[in-house]
Length: 310
Image (cartoon, rainbow, N blue to C red; front, side, top):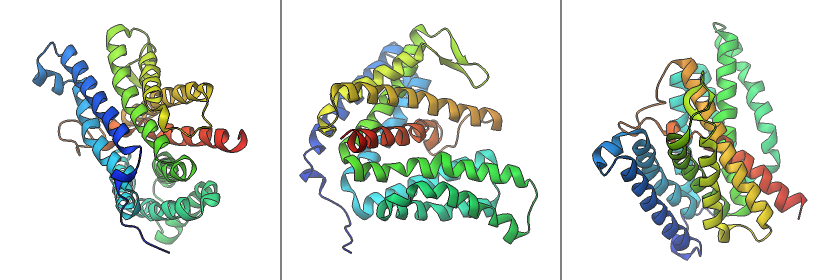
């Protein structure tokens, strides 16, 4: 089996068109930040919208690089992402060390299965939950047993297994669908905040997130729709206009859903941010939390379009 370090991104016909559109979108985002800051850029970048903009400005190049380079480089980037978000999650919710080791162990298992045995990917949640019960048996530690089993099991499903669908998505539909998903989530995040700030009055779940309004869902859907429309050339030919509309709806709705799940966990844990990996702007999960819902939802919808419907 040949080991590929990295592909030449310049040879990918999607690289330059997607890079150009991404650059234009960041200029658009910069303009939105400047508009709300009333031309005071420094104050704008310190605000909530500015935090979102800077967060995606940091994450986007890394995501682009990993997606187009593929090979060993992409694998390393994905591994680093897994371990960083797991570190944020386990710290915030209070997962004990033996269960953290179990989670870390299942990162390479999940990746290897998705890459080489995708037909077995659906069995991973059962395998993770079953082997998780071995932790208290082998360590002889049963303090907070049910809480720790719950935290670790949900952490695997919420982060590792969910995000691991990126690999399956690459096999199924290629780079284009991955980029549309990522850019759709980023635009949904920015547009949700923008629309919510302008006209948001009716809060979805005050106990979970007192700032996320139903009106903000319009922004989620607009952002996702914008991404799908601008990058529709990168979709497989089987995606009709109807499929594209459904895809935009799923990305927008999934982005809002993922953000609320993240807020709910942080609210129960009584923390403001997942971490400080982006200085002054929170953790990696504070910006990428929507993807944990959007990635598997987009994958299974695409599987239906490219598999069953085809």
